[in-house]
Structures are given as C-alpha cells and as structure tokens.
Image (cartoon, rainbow, N blue to C red; front, side, top):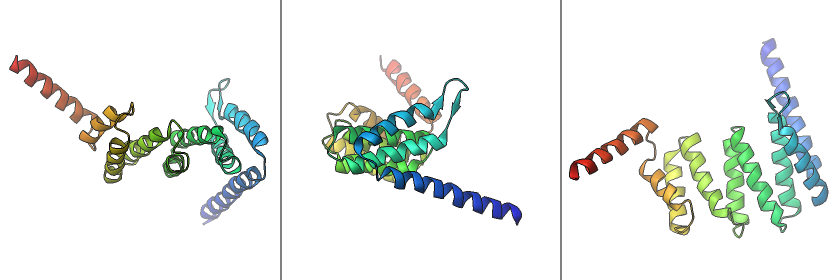
Length: 184
C-alpha cells in the first residue's frame, strides 16, 4: 500500500512538472523559445558521462511544440516540430511522435519534409507499434500522394513486407535469388 502511494505521488509530481514547463513555454516569445530549444537540445545527451536525459528530451519537445504555436508562420516552426517528433520517437513516446508527424503533414504541408512526416508516421506504426493495418493505410496514402518522393520505393518495399520478420524477408530474398539463378 505504501509503495502504491509513493508511485501515485511521484506520478502526480512528475506530471505537474511537465505541465509547468509546457505552461511556461507558451508564454514565451519566439526568440526566447528558440534559445530554450537550442539550450535544451544541447542538454539532452551528456557526452562527458555518456548519459541521455529523458526529462530534457521531453522539455525539448514541449519547447518545440510551443514554438510552433507562437510562431506558426516561421519556417523554423515545422523544422522544430520535425525534430521534436524524432526526439519523441527516440524516447519511445510513439503516440506523441504520431501526433506531431500528423501536425506537420496537416498544418505545414509546404514544409519540404511534410511527406516524410507521413512516411515516418506509417513507419512508426509499423515498426514500433506493430499496428499494421493503420500503417498499411498510411503507406498507401504516401505512395498515392507522393509517388516521386525519395521514400516511395522504400514504401513499396515496406508495403510488400508489412508484418514480416527480418528472417522472413531474408528468406524471401534468398528464394528469389535462387529462382533467378535457376532461370539462367
């Protein structure tokens, strides 16, 4: 019972701290947020002691999101959001990454990496979350809407092999190679 109370209390405290960062960052101007983004990004990974700080990564994501709210017309807004989504993926906050990728694709469609955000949303659903049906739909949307994108071929490959293990893909490739050699 005591352990449950301590866990509950620490969860409430941790959530409260995150909310304070988000609330405080929404009252900052774009220049201040930009400085916070740069400073916090440099604090995520400490090379001296080889440690990754998940709390700093979360702060970084929140600052990037706040920047996009404060300065949505600034070209850096989409760039910061893209970096935030990648950071969220790296700390395994997949739902947050999906939300940010969707925000980029929907609200910043002129951003050069907007199609890549759609691809990465599908890829996250596929490789990290094993939600193959949702991934399939997004991969198909990507191929239909962005057939000339540099990721189009990769997407076709991923669609063909959706849900297969690496071993199954290698076996399939080896079988194809064997058939080609027998045909010669």
